[in-house]
Length: 154
Image (cartoon, rainbow, N blue to C red):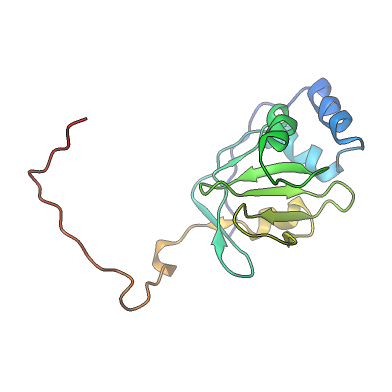
């Protein structure tokens, strides 16, 4: 089952053209179609399987922020379109020539993993987060106790 992504205001043609100019090439048609409906949307809790983990999308990057964001992120790939970010500071991006979606983890060097052939495939793979599927290894949950009268002072 896929998730519901809220509809948002469409970016203007000028904003889309600015991003294409910054990129130096046309934006993939599937990307343009997606952002015309969901630019900057924040989906409900979700999950997507990668080769070594499960990651989610906390928000889709608004077209107006994409170029500046890509330039500000240390180590982020060049000539790609930031699509979405997760809560850990990692990003999904669109490769403009193929339209494929890759996952960039800021802590891992090397080639970024292709997680979907295009945005449609990406959205199919993005499923609701299911807490019943979270399994802790023995010893992973060390428990804990907090004194209910503890009130930190800031």
